Length: 155
Image (cartoon, rainbow, N blue to C red; front, side, top):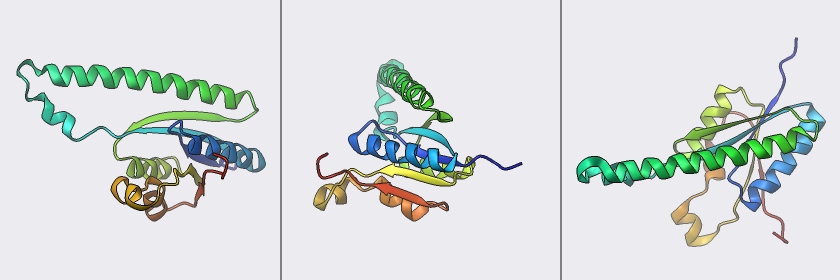
């Protein structure tokens, strides 16, 4: 019995992510592969330090906000997976927490992904230096092939 190929697609709901998802759809159709849509939450390190407020009100507020974000994102991810499933694809989705590049690579390894298909934001100069590039880090760390899909000239 052959194992179905899995294409891991990081989704952040940006234009670059949408473009990469469409490329992944085409690849999945031609390869008979399954799509695994993944959204990673990068929780700010400073959030924990805000809990020094008596009674933990800051932590409670942060937890409430993060829960709402998780629920909203889960809803959007479920909607996207449903839309893609209607196009005849096998689609799963997951939410993960952590540093995005490390979480993406870890999930790809755990899921034995055949490939990671991800968009780029096209940052350059000081913005790229300060913010960094998740795609670049994934390229360096992943043990499977990584297909990066840049924004088009019209995007």
